[in-house]
Image 1 (cartoon, rainbow, N blue to C red):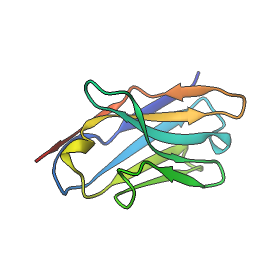
Image 2 (cartoon, helix red, strand yellow):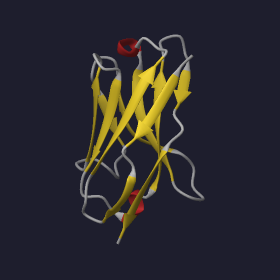
Image 3 (cartoon, one colour):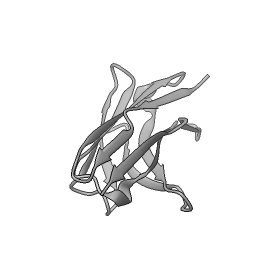
Image 4 (cartoon, rainbow, N blue to C red):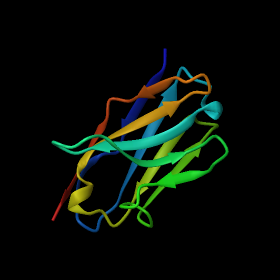
Length: 116
């Protein structure tokens, strides 16, 4: 059974930082592409950052230079370091795992709220 558990969300002032963590189980982590997505109220879920098994990264334009995705294959963890947070970053952040055979799995999400 695949399980993704996010943590690290919270309330922070604009300009502050948060580090999100996602613990994965039930998949061969080193073969999974990992990503962070977010969904703000009334909006569609959008990609924030992704990382392939080879370490290639992709970021949404709105977070480039502020957010950094990383992974620890030994610990089955993926992280999202978020710096210089803005009120428009407020959303529920979801961890996603994509497997080589086409599986796509989601965590339950963690709330990030940035006050102005």
